[in-house]
Amino acid sequence: MVKITDVARHAGVSPSTVSYALSGKRPISEETRLRVEASIRELGYRPHAGARALASSRSNVLALVIPLRTGIHVPVVMQFAVSVVTTARRHDHDVLLLTQEEGEEGLRRVADTALVDAMIVMDVQLDDPRLPLLRSLDRPSVMIGFPAEADGLTCIDLDFKAAGELCVERLAGLGHRVVALVGSPPEVYVRGTAFAQRVVQGFTAAADRNRLASSVHPCEAAPAAAAAVAEQLLCEQPALTGVVVHNEPLLEPLIDAFEQLGLRVPGDLSITAICPDELAESVRIPVTSVALPTAELGSGAVELLMKKLDGKTVPDATLLSPRLTERASTAPRNAP
Image 1 (cartoon, rainbow, N blue to C red):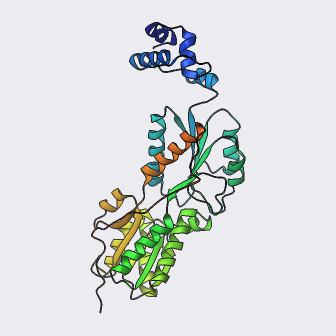
Image 2: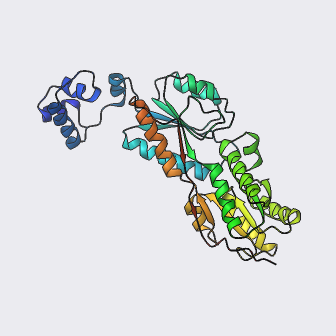
Image 3: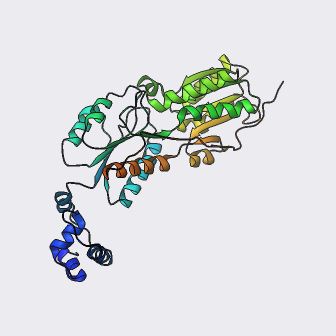
């Protein structure tokens, strides 16, 4: 294992000079700093985490707060986590993953220790009870999601309202006049989860603007629930020809359910979705979709945190514009 004394010998300086170059506690010449950094790279030196934290008052650890509540689609959540971890490592930071539903207590427990330098908070609710604490903490935070009142917070997310609108606009452009949203599980709406509520807002606004008949149906993420909601939709809206899906596990089961009820996709029924591209592409009938940019959001949250930790100014709100990709699940409406 390479030690700080090995770096000092290689660079032709004292061990204390190497320590100052790492911590920034005392000024050293630019020439010396560059020589020390070159030796660190060449020898593959890794500072001891505890010593580094003592030297810099930083742990080089970020907390990623993802309460694994019911109704959450874990595979998509893990895409966010992978992006956060990968980007954090590029900045020489590790990630502490907090999955328990501890609310304010969990945040305070981590913030009151030297475990982490900053926090990324997910599964944001419109009226999130964690907001007062996040505003009062002396540690930087970034939310992946937008509460109803975001003043004093740094937030990044897909513009889910615009995403819901974009799906409806595409169906309206294809001539569809009766549409439905098959949404997230009911408990997601009961909690007031921000992204799910905003999809409903966008879906409803675009349907009203285009004078479409529309309805919203929360749905459990299970094949039996997909079959039941498909039957309910056709019973309540016999003229239905367009569906927006915001519930990743239901894409394939819904297509199967509608086909078993006698509707061909896209011949009789066009389907759009809000989901990761790789999921939309993997379905038996590839689905026209608005991409869920998990990698961009995860990396963007880390980059914002790094700037905040360095004392730089960052925007309060970062909204990513939705991008719709046309695939085989949509077609012009067959007018009677």
